[in-house]
Amino acid sequence: MVTLEPVDGTDIYIWKYLPSIPAAIIFIVLFTGVTSANCWRMVKTRLWFCSAFAVGGLFQMIGYPARVFAHYHTDQIGPYAVQSSFILLAPVFYAASIYMVLGRVVRSVHGERFSIVRPSWMSKLFISCDLLALSVQGIGGGFTIHADTQELGKYIAIVGLFIQLVGFGFFVAAALVFHMRMRREVAKESDSRPKVPWRQGLKMLYACSGLIIARSCYRIIEYIMGLDGYLLSHEWPMYVFDSVPMWTVQAFSLFGSQTNCSLAEVVRMGMCSWK
Image (tube, rainbow, N blue to C red):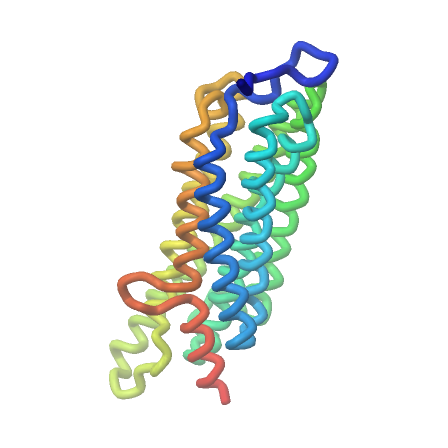
């Protein structure tokens, strides 16, 4: 029978519970499916900006198998570090793709004058913020795998999550400003409404952004509560507040919602309108 064990040669338990094999396998299947479909569509439509979504999915496909392995090896730091780092960092890549989508939506409707950030700078600005968040969270995640630097790693990871949260907040504000200005313009010039489904694209952006922001808030609270807090001592919160929302983001980016309009499809139609 598998039991929770301390790290080899110490009395320190890096796991507070035995990772669930069935739960991890479910999300291995889910992320493998949606990532494979994402890659297929990316190649078919040549929307290479979606590669960031694919990389995020690949991170998930590495993280959850590591949890299965960790079930049998709770005394090893390696599996814990792999699953923690890859699952923590995957949403940063989702965010990068979402940032690129907004700039393309703005250009597809020739709405540059309605955006508070120039579309040519949009990807550079927000992805730079994303890379900074990625680097800081990665450093923090690395420190948390060692007992003597766990506390420092926790605070570094929190800083990285706050950077991501602030960047995303500004991004959503930029999208909202563009949305309101564009809506007023369309109302005045009803005869020249864009053929691109830009409203559906923005709704998808809001949905994905909201899920990522909610997930970042969960992770911040998790780290603030500490290693002995309820969130890190129980497994279900991670699946409910991280795994499910992030799979939903990746599915939204691919399949769309009730509007039957995916982010990739909006951008594809927008690119066609430039020709």
